[in-house]
Image 1 (cartoon, helix red, strand yellow):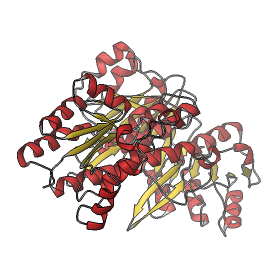
Image 2: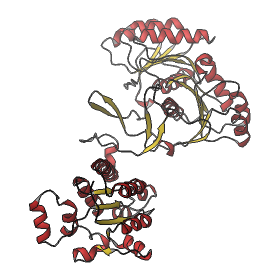
Image 3: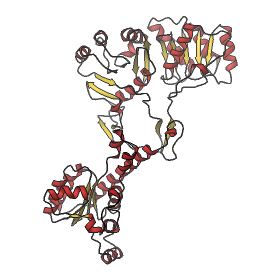
Image 4: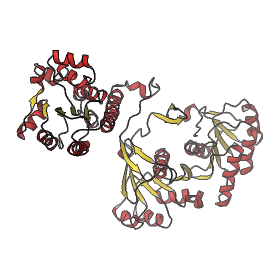
Length: 511
C-alpha cells in the first residue's frame, strides 16, 4: 500500500472534485492546485496551495505554461526506492507528490461544436497529459486519476487500507495511457491534411474510439462485443429492443445501399446482402417491388427507405416480421402503427454526403488490413460498350440500376434487374456461374421473368459460361468490369447471341 501525503489536483471537469478533495484533507493530505481548480477548492473552504507557490513562477502565456517545471515533475517522477533520486529531490527542495488528479481540456468536444481552428488549437492540453504520463510512469509510488468516475473506488480503498494498492495504481496508469493515446489520436486526425482523406494510407495505423455501447453479445451468444465510435451520429433508435451486433452490421449495409438512390427507394437486407431493392413513384410501390424479389428471405430482415414512411406503408410493413426499419423520418400516425410491434427497432437515418469512413480495417492474425473504402462514385461516361449491339434506353437504365445494387452484394455477385427493381440476386458463391444459377433459381421461385432483363457481375466473367448462363435465363444486356484474359471470348459469345455488354473498368469485390 502507498500512503498519500501530498496531492496535485488540476481538472477541467470539476465533477466531484470538492468532495474528493475534502476527503483528502480530512486524511491529512496536502493539496496543490492550479488556477481554476484552486479557485473552486478555495471557495469551498479547503486549504490548498497554488502551483505557482510550489514552482516559484507565475502562470505564463495565458496559462499555456504553469506546471511544466522540475518542482512539479520532479516531485511526481522521483523513484522512492532510489537513494540518488531522493538525494537530488532534497537538494533541490522539491516535495514528493503521491497523488495526481488531472482531466484534460475538451479538445474533441470543441472540434465537434464547430469551433474555429484557433479555438480548437487552444484546447490542446499540454501540461495535463505531461503530468498524467509522469504519474502513470511512476505508478509504483504515485496514484493517478484521470476520470472522476474513479474517485469513489480510490476513496474507498484509502479509507479501508490507508493507501492505494499496486494493482489499483497499475490499473489507473493503464487507463491514463489509453486516454492520452486517444487524445493524441484525436489531435492527429484533426491536423491531418485534407487530401489524405482521398488516397493516402497512414504510416502508423491509429484507431481510438470511445465505447458507445456494450452489446449483449457478438455474432453469436458466446462472443462478447461492444460498439465504439460515432455510429449514433448517423442513426437514432426511436423504438424497439436494444440493437444487437448483427443488427448494427446489417443497418450499416442497408444504409450504404439505400444511399445510392435519389429516387424513392426501398431495400431489404439479410445478413448484409440485399434480397430485394427497387425504386418507384413512391415508397409503397418501391417496397412491394423489392419484397417480391424474395419474400422468404425478407422475413426477419432489415428494411431501409430513403423517404418518410407514411401510414399506408406502415400498415403494409406490419404484415411481416422484420428486425429493423430504417428511414429518414416516420409520420406520427405511421409511428403509432409501427410501435405496436414492441421489439422491432425503428431507426432514423441521417443521410450525410459521405457517411462511410475513408478507411476499412480488418484484423488478420497478429495484424490488420487497411484499405481506402470503396466509396468512389461510378461514372457511366467512362463505361465502354464492347459489343456490336448498343444497349437501348431501357437497357441502359436497367444496367445502371443493376450496377448500383451489385456493388453491395457479397462476391461472387450476380444481379438481374429491370430498370426499377431487382429480379434475382446470387451472392457469396464460390463460382460466378453458381451465383448466376442461384439468382435465376430465386427469380423462378418468386415468379419473376428474366426475359429482357439486365445482369450485373461485380467482377469480370473469367469464361464465357457465366455470360451464357445469363443468356439462357433471358438477359439481353450485361454490365461487368472486364479485364479477363478471355474478354475477347466473352465478347464473341455476347455478339453471337445479340447481347449488349458494357465494361465499366471498375471491379466491386465485397468480401
